[in-house]
Length: 638
Image (cartoon, rainbow, N blue to C red):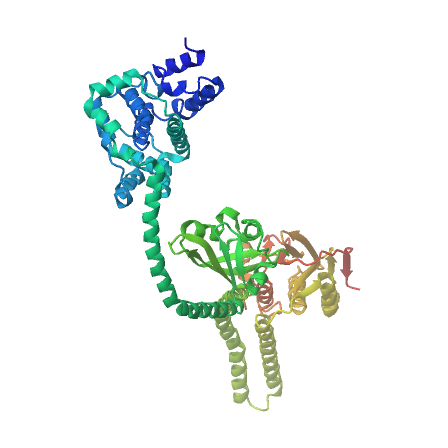
């Protein structure tokens, strides 16, 4: 009577194989052997027919014929293939090619390795019986099973074709087949079941393939030893050839090694003194080399054992327009990912002290002998000074263009205004020549007119000189308290202030960055302009104020004078352009001089006024310095 375990085995296989009766004296052994069979073979997720056919093919190489005979019976329908009752049996005609298929060795294995390499990895479905795909998988599995010299490359081919999970499942099948073969060798009393004996008696050709298979005459160990001996003979010949070649090349090797070391040292010295920063990093973002200039560019020294990307990602890099580059957008990452070099890329590097420098980056990939990217080398050139020179050059060109435009207008106006007094002097001189010397009174009058004309010309020339000087030379920028400048102007204009009985109201004014001499000329011209163009019979009142406007200070000089029509608001700043005739003294260069001074300081000037006699407000902007205020002051003629 069968035990519960034997009944379980018989239900799974469809019969009770004698293989599991060998340890009937110790039920624990049979139970554990059955458990291993279930785990490694029967419940293995590989396809049942694939497992059973592989079991049969591997059993050809076992001296004991029990395993191959029993599993051929499973394939033929005498039981369930791989314990799977749903797996359809195969005919003897389909089984015979499997038993006759030779095991490819050496170069004969190469085409089957190529078949494995052509599979989609991992396999989505296993190949059909007797297909090239099955033959390739069985051949590679058999070399791994027998541990032939071709086993390593066969195992790698299986790994690529099956993927890691299916390969481990296949390894379990191979382990169980190895256990089954060893178990049958240790039990010579094991006999074939009656159904197998009847199958072999019925099919003589099948019996010949199973019982007289030439692959079974030598066991796997003997086959492995023979293969190893053949391999050793080949290795000995190769060793002798390599030894001879090594002896011939040893002297050249030493010479080349010395030359390489010398070249490497020279290259390192050259890179160390280069005026540009040079550093190399691995594909993982680890710094592998840097020269002293790289430390100056970075502002600190990297650690050669820093974690991957920790140093490179710690730098803040900006595009020329000021946009921050995220670490994943760093140029070196693009080179490592694509292998495409970056040439003359302008960047801005922020150092640990928050100072920024402009650099020109050139980055190229480092490759191994196979062409794969292994790292990158970067060259950063500091172009901060070049950028400053370029900006200064652009500013000078802009200033030159402005000066040329002003000069063109100015030359025309000067030639026109200087002609008038010259013509007057010439006409008066001609009158003196034609006059009778007895007419002393007329001559004195003409001489007075000549003196007035030449005095006007002198004033005009002096004004022209001040105007020309204001637009030239280097600005002496410094922190200037505007209130002190107003005090100086008030002292200079004291006679005119007293004459016109003017009152100057100065509100709290800041400190600005400006040329103190030009700033005094600016304010003096605006105040004189307000004093000259006051309304008849009314004392001038001038209010001076300043207010913050963004990063600039905006100043206003307001008067209660005659006002300026809107269509003349731009006209008044042109050189030698006057809205009044000779009844009000002046050269027409005061406001033009003001515009030149403000423009050179990077600000702008304009006028706000209504033509209704409500006065005018001249506004201008200057760069701010430290803010400083004081009490309001009223200045009135004594």
